[in-house]
Image 1 (cartoon, rainbow, N blue to C red):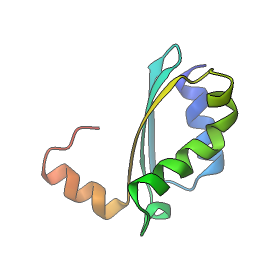
Image 2: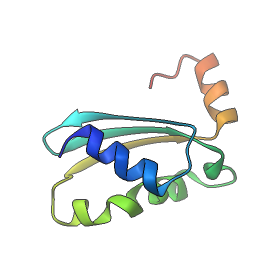
Image 3: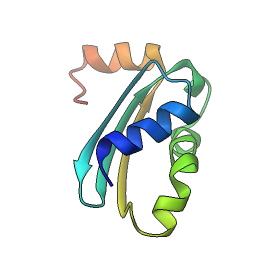
Length: 85
């Protein structure tokens, strides 16, 4: 699976302002910013990202997935502290 495929799946499923997917083979990193994460715990944010990808995780097409999900306000604050994408 290619990062672009994962990005398309997530863009279709989630209303996010910014989305980046990096990786190769079966190991990927997702960076997402959107109001949809407002008021959610880190675990709930990750579950929102995992849900549309569940079948690919179950069949091991995606073996490892690192997720960084922020609200726009959280992302602005993280940028001030030099948080990498």
